[in-house]
Image (cartoon, rainbow over all chains, first blue to last red; front, top):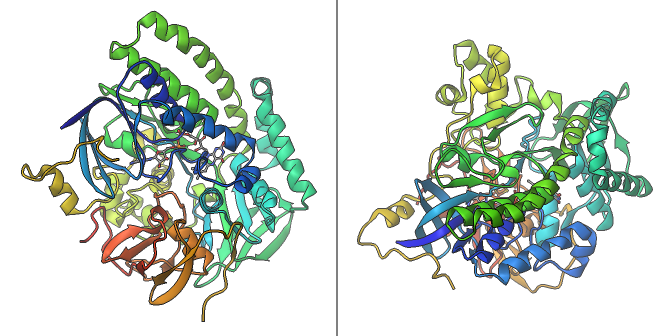
Length: 468
Length: 104
Ligand SMILES: Cc1cc2nc3c(=O)[nH]c(=O)nc-3n(C[C@H](O)[C@H](O)[C@H](O)COP(=O)(O)OP(=O)(O)OC[C@H]3O[C@@H](n4cnc5c(N)ncnc54)[C@H](O)[C@@H]3O)c2cc1C
Ligand code: FES
């Protein structure tokens, strides 16, 4: 079997930065990502996207090319279209279009990033409804934009996508926003800390200005949101400022924040705790990204939402820590290089309490009406979860047996938090006591043939690294 | 009749190649993302849910939600993780067994 010093799962800012930093110190790094290109969510296709797309996506986006360059110029062994489906002890199994691979790694770094928080409102499963991030991916990856989309929800990414649509020449029809003035008042109590992240505030103000100049209507403090249509979405219903609206549209883009993608960390058995400020479960890690599982590290948004800069800094910090652990970097040198990065990361994180309070998740999507589908895969409604709670179901693993929620292909990625929240509310228990749906391998669907290919001693198991 | 698209393609330079979806032929930009290209061509429903049999379309475009499931050469694939190649014959995934293991 092939061996590496460090296997990194995820080639976003965190994974790329960790790879480059560790390789620089002489560590043998294998960098795996299921996407076709380096970049992760924020820098998707930054290497191959056109000039036009670069202009639409803005300066921050093009910054990503520095990171992809650093990886390209290093000795990092990067494998595209590599889906990691199992991490056991220090063995990482992944499949690529040309075969199955198993690699033994001294250290494993999970840099799997974030997911957009599920937003279960009536009609959110209809074709024509997608996440705002999905629309952004279509733009980054393919230069395809939705005409006259209605953006629904809240948060910096909602505004960013709206502005990118404006720049692409197809301004959204409207923004239906769920945050309120009192959210902003609560956020302002954190203004002192937020001022350290003044660049973000400045950028936010410029974004709102651009939307205003483009004449995009904003419906702030919207409630009673429902997406209407039979075979596909054709309108957004909502109430705002005492009036009821029904706005015709073919495309609805939902977004109310991002949450750590904890699937890999959960599968690896790492302990998580509920972070009330981020409204999400986060894995337990120390400032270096070390978890309590020997040799397993987490960096980037997967360890708690901090944004792209913070993800990059965390990646570098963990890269240095792993290099030290492997004996490639003396402690003093690790600390000398890491200390300024840790300081910068603190500055980056100072804006988060403000953002989290100014743009909290949409309350009605945290406590959906009984009729709203919560588990998209198994088509389970919120009411069914509440019924399960009435019958004594306390946690999401029991709920699986009662309702099949979380048993579909996405393995709870988009219903896990909703199911836990509904159970916690119904049973009047904390999120920590309620827990999260158990994640078992395979992390991503594999065929039985793929599993067999790894376990058949006679099968010629390809070696990692031999991809080119 | 081909459906009307709700999307615009900003760059139309790439050569078009034929791809079949549900028996209908489309001309899609070679090498582009399959899910995006099909949506831009006006396709709405990619898969049918297993219980209620209703149509679903790509939701996350990042490989996480599995609502873009299609059948390609008898194999279930996520269209958002595939590229357009000439001659692909794609079928919507219909009422298949859910669960982490694909049927093959
Ligand atoms: C859809 C979306 C769009 C976003 N757009 C922006 C934006 O424009 N600007 C901004 O500032 N922030 C954006 N964010 C927030 C952004 O994700 C983070 O700030 C930043 O990308 C985090 O970097 P990361 O390295 O932690 O993870 P990511 O950049 O998310 O990278 C994680 C990588 O891990 C890979 N991966 C996950 N699981 C597996 C597996 N099992 N096998 C193989 N590979 C795997 C993924 O393919 C992905 O490439 C976006 C978030 C999302 C979800
Ligand atoms: S659109 Fe979500 S997995 Fe493809």
